[in-house]
Length: 63
Image 1: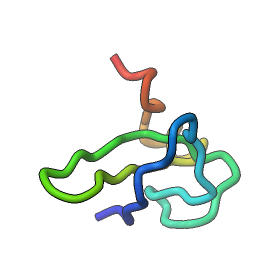
Image 2: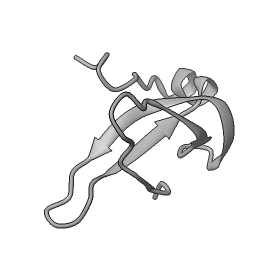
Image 3: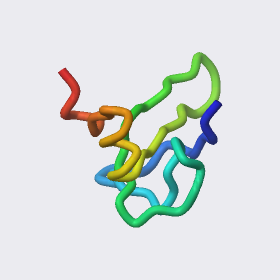
Image 4: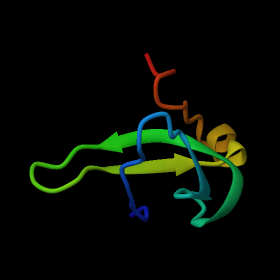
């Protein structure tokens, strides 16, 4: 399971953490917003290498 971060504020689409390799990153972007029935939602970020290896697309670029 991936680590979870709080939902970012408006306009925030970058993180210094990659949830896929569970480490620091200077290239991580928002991949998925996980909505929860109660409480705040969560978000997942992936770095450029993890996006390429896993064919992940940034949130908003997904079909």
